[in-house]
Length: 63
Image (cartoon, rainbow, N blue to C red; front, side):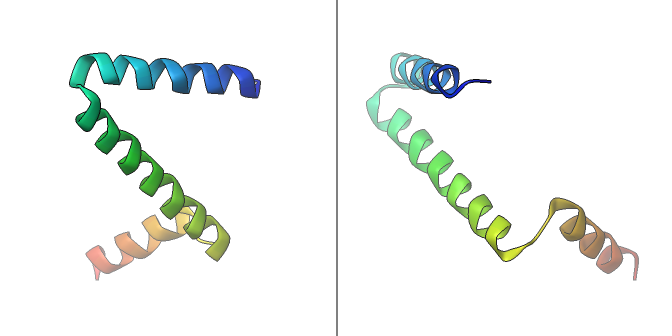
């Protein structure tokens, strides 16, 4: 998907959230998404994968 489509979708979602929830709730949603993206990027830089995290969690649950 081209980046302009991604930008258009983000703009659409922000505008719909603003209309639906109001400004402050939309701002909280956008900030929480930004925190989630930042955390995911940090985990990616550390070399963690979802599969390795899942295997560790399942090992702890089964032992």
